[in-house]
Image 1: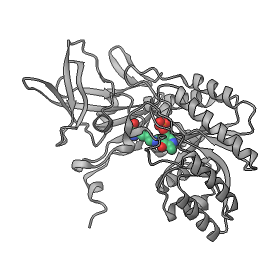
Image 2: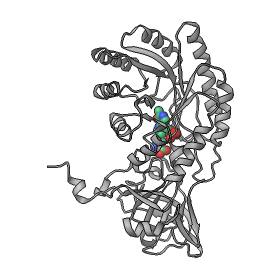
Image 3: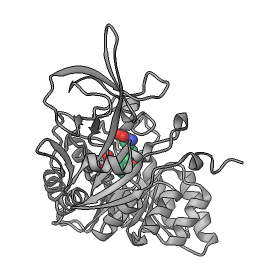
Image 4: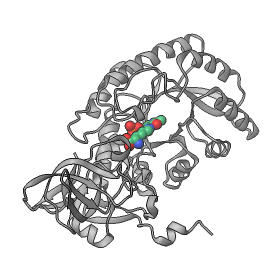
Length: 412
Ligand code: LLP
């Protein structure tokens, strides 16, 4: 459920007509709904009310400071994967004891910054990373709380580019290596092993791979427990999918119930790192039709948003629903919705039935709240779009549109 709805044929973001926003702020334009963000966070978080838990929003999905501030206000923590994300999270007021740090390639300075901030824990992905964190922590007179990211070798049945928990993936350590890793970690003076972590992939539309993973992790947890290695945090990562088109992912409540049943009574705090399920359907990308053209085989709608603004269709062949901002009741035809970038992969939709759009009209690209702006680039020297947050009738400019001066600001 989200708050982008038609009223008398006009698309509204909460209580504001989207066409008014485009008129004032220009296009392409990202528009987020604050009420939807709150609702999605609460729906997810409350699904785990039966367990000691911490919901750590995955910053990579949407890292706008205003969005992160909302998460902090709601009591959420964050999952970060870089020094830049740590900087954003702290700036947005996320308490450091609610920050977990994942990622296979943490650099020295990033580890230092995270230790300085005293984050909750590092999710460690290799033995060399463990050694590096140990050295830096000792050097700083600190002890780093860590978990190991376990690669459980489970097929999440999602797009191969966003599958992360299979043997062939670069992420985490397999269970055999993890055994040695925990033993070593216990002996290192700069390290306190406190958790166990995994993240098997993104846009999962079934609970089964999560449960299969959990079963493997719990067996390993018991094994460690018998050896006197006491784990306090179990981090199951993110990955719960959303509806872009016809997908029917489990409701967070169903996910929560399944995990609650599996974990009830264990002396563990469950950590979750949802990104897409919270932010995905809280945002749209508004774009203006520039030109229409037809070839013998295709009808093209050329819009002013491109793969640099929303790369998911080009990168993963992802489906994003597209709709009119003002409804005109015209007959539908099949179109490719494409941007101005000089690549054939620059499309937002292919062979899509749309009521015939006209030059100058606006279209809304749905499900753009996660991995939309955060993956945007300046390719073709296109300034990145503005981001707005609508809350009832209030509109906040959460990021101004980039200018040509911004494009060259770092270049002598
Ligand atoms: N935790 C870790 C360690 C992750 O790597 C990710 C996502 C998440 C949590 C959040 O996963 P989510 O709940 O959003 O599924 N750019 C791709 C998605 C890449 C996901 C990468 N990791 C896309 O646009 O589909």
